[in-house]
Length: 64
Length: 307
Ligand code: SF4
Ligand SMILES: [Zn+2]
Ligand SMILES: [Zn+2]
Image (cartoon, rainbow over all chains, first blue to last red; front, side):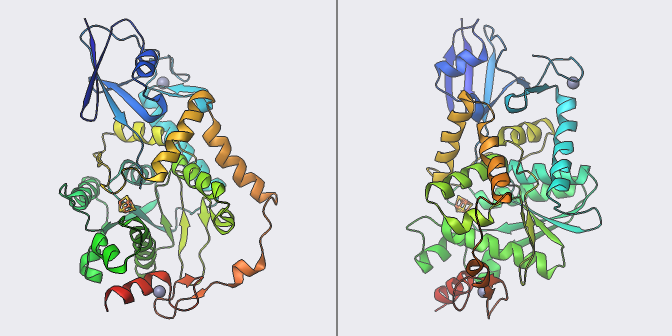
């Protein structure tokens, strides 16, 4: 039972049933700095993550 | 979360505005906001010829898209910096700009630094021995000079860049930390045109970086996701992260920091010393305004590397 979270070339796993906000907190990722997508759709922090889902995080910060 | 306008499922939540919107309403909302700030800061009109500096990144391509949707006469300029570093960074960025412009039937001017000045930016940086191993100082100098030159030579009324609120807040934070008086006097959404310098504006200065990323994704605009290899560990990125921590705990902090700065300055927080204004004069070689005594920093750099 797990939800896969992908950010650039890193992969994390979290337990299903928590919402995206808690998952990001657990992984120590600032919600301000990423956009979360699932199957191409944007999802928000209150979205409950379900078993087997793959969430891709798009980093929004560009430096330079 | 539900869209405040239509009640459908929201795709974007902007805590600083207490506003959640669905995809369609968000894609309408962003251009409306940009239009509002173009008017508010009197950036340009629909009669003027606008040149957008595009880098292939989300902000500048997103901005170009917005300006076209709003009915502005906007062409693009891409500056080929010649940054390869094994990932063909400049090459890929250029392709994405060309793809966007041909998909939308737009005019894109390309200035290749290697062709114009003999060396790509990283080599220029080494030859001029500025910037301690990082080409960013020279890169910034080259971009500012060449963008301005391109706009002047091709007769554009205004030069537009894709700086978003996070960029502006990070620069403001750096300038404040170091009490850079001169920069604090000048930083803003609009830099009026002066002798040798074309008017410069930042229509995204009130839009969060996260909103621009969402806009570009939802509009299906192909942009360069990789960072410039020299951006890793930059202080700008570090300041942005700091400000995002603040924003996370206190939504709206970034916006307040920037907007209140502009307002306070307008109401006289900083009093401009005449000296600062008067010390600018046109560079004898290129004609752009400079504060240095003789040649401007760009022309001095070119001088140095061609010896
Ligand atoms: S990170 Fe430095 S070298 Fe790369 S584009 Fe930005 S300023 Fe230029
Ligand atoms: Zn809606
Ligand atoms: Zn000069």
